[in-house]
Length: 90
Image 1 (cartoon, rainbow, N blue to C red):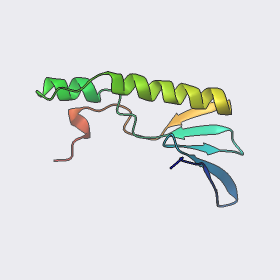
Image 2: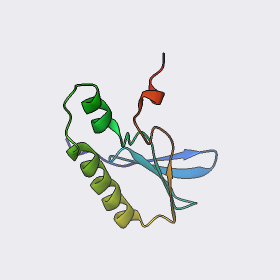
Image 3: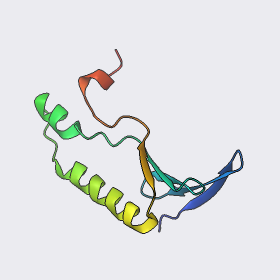
Image 4: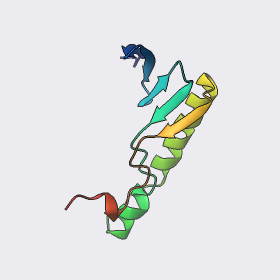
């Protein structure tokens, strides 16, 4: 099954929900991305769990393709940019 984009309207503003797990705010030409978890592989390896760094490289390549396709004027990371022990709720 092919993943598709979904256009939605919130408070009179138009957004496209992207299959790349991002959203594009059309009026502002802003790409919104959350949960990149850039330090996930090193954090897991430090705690004895092997995890490839290819995951982050793949995610960054996907983000780059979306940027090239949509040509946003701004990119906003909404949260969980880095994966560290500070993100773990106790």
